[in-house]
Image: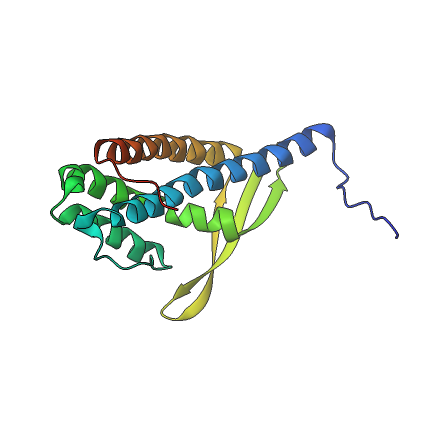
Length: 176
């Protein structure tokens, strides 16, 4: 079997910058994945309690619908209702990161280096607007990507702590 060298011809600094871009992208996806998992985990754990066992077995695919479903649990009488305000605020906050999550998970990364040596990063991705595919572009640089990660990580930690507080306080049983 013939081997192919797929490495880029780059200086050590350029290669380090490219790796940094990929690591930041991966860290953003990882942080967001934790939040998405905990959304589902809270929902399915809650379904194991008598107060919530009438809820559908499946969570919808679309994130917005998933979020509405989780918020509806906090609106029902039961042990989770005491966390209604916190849960509503946390769930509403998730949507503020949806665009960057979409670009990080599905976008095509284009990295350009200016004459100054500064990296300009573009993510291109398709979104659906009125049933039609539209290409959107998210532009920035390493600093912007790092700032996005810092904001998302801070939010993620708050959401993880809230989810565990609800699980512990309401004694939500493990699923499976």
